[in-house]
Image (cartoon, rainbow, N blue to C red):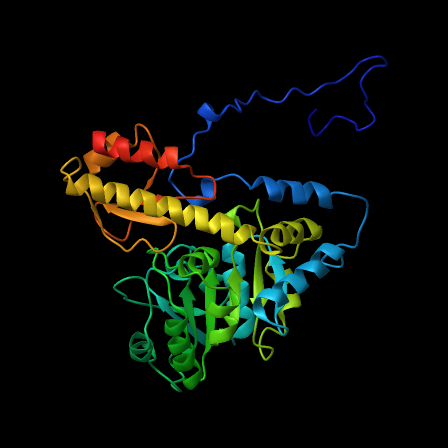
Amino acid sequence: MNDQTPLSQNPPAGHTTTFSPPAVDASPSAHPRNFGSDNWAGAHPEVITAIIEANVGHTPGYGGDPWTARLGEVMKGHFGPSAQAFPVFNGTGANVLALQSALPRWAAVITAASAHINYDETGAPEKVGGLKIIGAATPDGKLTPEIIYNAVLGRGNEHNAQPLAVSISQSTEWGTTYTAEEIRAIADTAHGLDMILHVDGSRLGNAAAYLDTSLGALTTDVGVDIISLGGTKNGLLGAEAIVVLNPEIGQGMKFLRKMNLQLSSKMRFLSAQLNALYGGDLWRTSANHANTMATRLADGLAEATATGRAPDISIVAKTESNVVFVHMLDEVAARARQSFAFANWPMAKNVVRLMCAFDTTAEDVDALIAAIVEA
């Protein structure tokens, strides 16, 4: 039907119009597990079940539903009675909206140069959020009080964007984690400089699992003001949340969420996913599994190097979450990619990133190690 066809032209009586979708090979061999990103993994079966169970009858839109009300209680359970949760569609939207809701237009945000908000979001915090990002060099993706002090420039000068926030990634883009003590030191530094502390928690669950602690112990208890809480990387179909911990910030969130295209009309389906992940232990069991697979991978590659079976590779960062960084020549990586997909790491020459997910298996890991050794 083209644009000129009258809408009243229906198929002749007795004619049945059918649509045949293209065939998709759903066999596991056609869609093997790979190590390109934890975003490549599917949704956790419990999450799919939660979506199906939420797909009943009619309920108020835009967050006026019982699933979203339940999410508010779940988040208070993790982050304390003052926590306010706002479901959104994706991580970039969560980061932009969280920072924008807490800061004036003249603000600057100090973060690690490798941080997602600085390197991987196509300038969205600056172009959409209207904020200046100051990326500071770090040896391992982690800010320190000293790095923050050295990045605070132009205070009070009308020619400079004003540093009013610190943002840390937990875990970092290099796979390292901040301990509660390290975050407390950063929070104290930020607050002493009249700045807020934001956590990009796209993999907060992996950090908490690695450190064997609670979500609140890494955030509320150590002075964090606002969180971008991840979900997609830990098994959700597509849902993240902003959690406001400091009641003095984020008052305009409900308006900015709409303005920033992050307000879901059928919010129950986002909230149902987040409830499935955070309403029980699924976040921890999934994160623990992904971390364990990364440790297995790192240990296996280190053993292969030590025994001379893979002498030309080396682990280049601590494995403290669900990612392993390996120095590997391009020709070796190319041969290994004949069996598995994984990404080059753009921040270091001849380094590849190997990501594990909630559904990575020990067999997957061992097969990748064998492929790298073979390469």
